[in-house]
Length: 233
Ligand code: B1M
Image (cartoon, protein in one colour):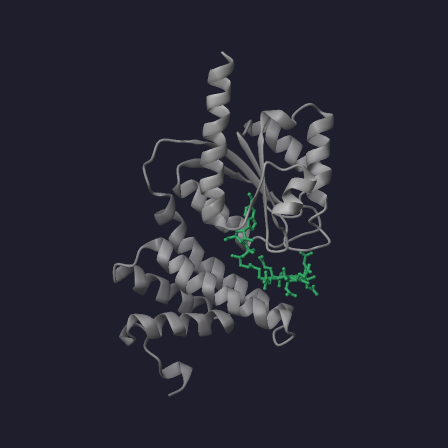
């Protein structure tokens, strides 16, 4: 059977998820949209569609990109397909009706245009009840400062996917310090090449391994901050 003959709605769940990994790999946006909707219609939780079908598919793409099997144009198509699936899930993940826990500004740092992980973090934070202001990609320090002034967030989130761009996080944090703004915000950093040690070295409050950890860390640090403020009164 060729890919053209496959009727997605007739595949059982496990084969459909496998097919989504293949379709993501091949950058087939419409198929990813259709399959995302099928899984939702079958009662899958949006979070499970996101992690088991889309994120896992992108992990496979990432491995083959690393190994020189896939190249930038192909990975761009995969990224577009991934985003199409994510945009179906986004309103569903955000639809919790939970009271607002706080506000986060998030952006990818200067020189870096990767945004899938950042978008995912934003979606999960919204779903957990945070207001999220996404300032996009390739942000110089001025953009972060402007967003902080405009939106007065509790949390500043920065994403970097390249070893060459991750040091820029320190530039942003040092500038916040110089301007006396650092202590007013919880600073969280994330992205595939980072780790705990790096997060501490650049002066962030925490490194977040993934979107779920970001939500937990944000809640935890915000609670601690509120307790500290209450104790100081
Ligand atoms: Co790029 N790329 N890429 N790429 N790309 C990587 C990052 C790379 C590791 C691939 C590889 O070679 N193995 C490699 C970096 C190597 C390095 O730095 N040592 C790389 C390279 C080299 C490049 C280019 C330089 C390639 C070139 O031009 N020759 C170029 C750079 C462009 C630039 O930014 N200036 C480039 C371009 C691209 C595309 C445009 C083709 C595309 C991006 C499309 C887009 O984002 N719109 C792309 C992609 C898709 C990838 C890989 C394959 C996948 C990244 C991704 O979306 N992962 C990636 C390989 C990899 O990471 N293994 C790769 C899925 C996503 C859900 O995970 O982003 O890790 P991730 O996010 C996670 C966590 O990290 C965390 O939570 C997220 C969700 O759980 N997290 C945060 C992320 N940000 C956070 C922020 C937070 C908290 C948690 O704030 C609080």
